[in-house]
Image 1 (cartoon, rainbow, N blue to C red):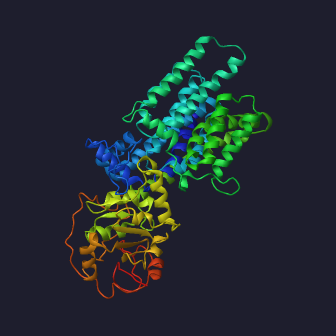
Image 2 (image 1 turned 180 degrees about the vertical axis):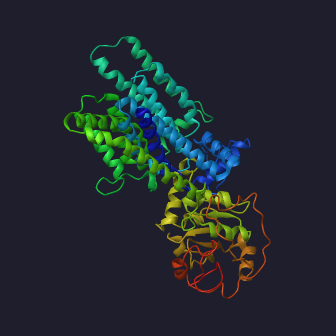
Image 3 (image 1 turned 120 degrees about the vertical axis):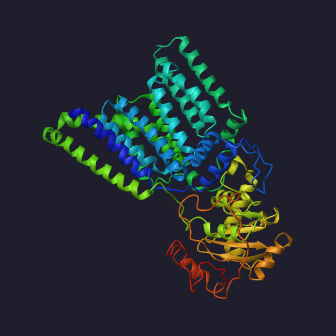
Length: 557
């Protein structure tokens, strides 16, 4: 009974600690788009071109997240935001469960497997957003389990990988990592036996057939061979995106990843239990993570069994060389107590999170987009990358965006570079406005257009809040809208700010209120600097006004 209780506590402990990471949920910039695109798929649409941007309407859209977005949309339709959180938790716990299983088999020690899984969860934490990448984490963990069971040879369990790739290639572009790592593992698994001349021709034929099956599986998607070609050549953005940035090795960032990489690397150098396929996979994924930090969770999945083997060796050494008899007797009660405490903390976190996905109004332009919707201001809208898919969700019907988080899957590289110059104010920043029919700019307060357009002769500054500015083009497309603005007919009354996903209603289902009312003189007063430093939330979710009773105002300074 004691061992059974110990095993249950170890399982409950890593699950509780993982849930503490998983339950608090914040909206990813692309979450609105994933649900929106999935809804279109559920309605029978399979767009092959961009279609949603005025800058690249006819550019091919190679959507490598079809199944994931359909699953997200179906989950949202059935259970709302709480359903999306449940989907995230289910996928993440399944991934970590496979990690624990692999670590347990590799190490032969449940304690080592539990500690390694908890470490992996901490390293993977940045990847636990509600996004299609969650499916890649699950599928990679399953791939590693299948390959390890087959001892990295093209036999038995390994043949489960090609069918998995067929599902994976229709779910997320991370399939390329899975296929590449599988191929490396199979080749590495042949190397040592081949060197010892322990293999017959059949092993090489099986390996070649396995690799051919992987390649064929990659083409089984609506785009055919074009999708893997795109993933190989064009998926990585060439503009500075945080999650695609390299890891700085000389600072204190991502310390858990660095510690895990150093520990596993050192163990593989000195231990006789190290295996060549494992070493290859750990080295490759660590290198990929250093080049692009978004790959850190993949490294954690691959490295966790190796870390567990290291920990098992350390535990075995301690048992041989230290008098741990009394400590061992106290360990089980301590484990039970620690597990009970962590379960209580997890329950408190679950109660606090309440199945909500937080939308931070200090990050997203929920007030500005609400202003556009309330006043019926539609058109071609230029927003920063990170706001594009929220814009697709919430802008008034008939609106299109300049660019959004689909990046290279739906936009040409030249346009992405133009959009980046626009946001940064670099030379040529106006190209996005002059070469494309932009009607409205929603500019982040922290980016260059907020400053450059303030006194620009072709643009009218009509709105600001603590996060963003809104500008309208002076010209025939917005003439009627500007006439209402100059007649003080815009509404600047803000409804309470929604702090939970989706925060704003879908444009095609949102009621369009009558445009009535007039901005008062008090609404037209104050300074942008005061507004920027005012508390974003006050009372029942309203932004705090800088110097008047008006909840929102068009501010000039």
